[in-house]
Image (cartoon, rainbow, N blue to C red; front, side, top):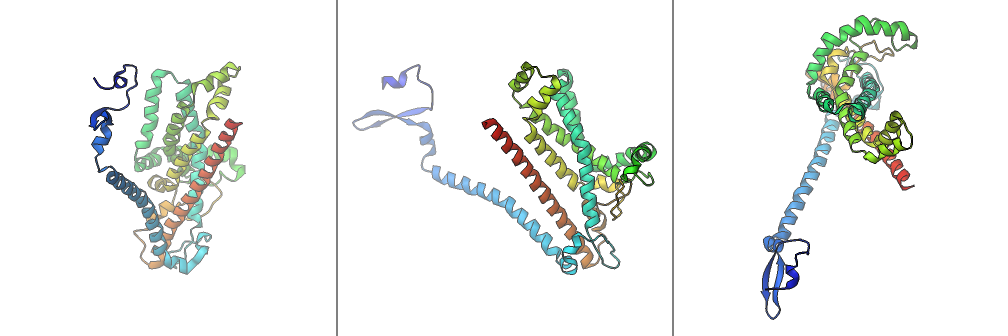
Length: 346
């Protein structure tokens, strides 16, 4: 009959066991997992550990190789210009005088303008779909917002040339020049092809990224946070601001980081509408240039070693700017999450 303790119906099931007989001790239950492992368990664990270690090392090795190649290929430009390359604004391939400041300026301004437009719209879309949208429309609306992320960037560029640029040149830019021209940000001829067009098309491209992540973060905020705020007499806006957005701010910042990464590295759509002129202008109506755009436009035309090296150094500058921006953003996320932890602990 075996041990009665092994046959109790109220005993929780833990692991299938097999009985084996030990001399002088009767039947003993042996876990089936130990029988399946046999003697190869330690070997399998070692193989698995080495495989996972190689996967992690491969990512780090890829990053190191990218940095090594960029630094190596940009050597002639480093020797010719040094650190002045990043603060000089002249770009003259004929006389081999190169400076990356206009491209850094164009990249940062267009990305900042895109975030300025996209972040409020993205958070608004996310709040509407999670808190105010009818359930029957929530699924289709979320699907169409996410569908914007699947559109190729060259299609965005074509749409911007044939739709966005005429609207800007005929309606938006004249209105901005008339009402806000005194600021100096909206002055000059309204050609449409400008830094403003690049910022708007970038904003449209990163809205689905920020909105999707923000929506997912808002959906995991506990329901009792909303109910507690409403029970204390808060309005719907106060409930969303205090009970939902405040608890989800770390995830929202993470979504903004991903959107910023897309904006910094975007090439084709920006190249088609920014004007591609290496200059630094205060007005958003003026054309500009980005680091990704100059690489796409001029890399195949670079003939001299210094010219090619200067373009590769711009790629290195783009890499450095991306690293710095992401480091600052991660520092912001850390400060936000630390603040939440302190508040919760208190």
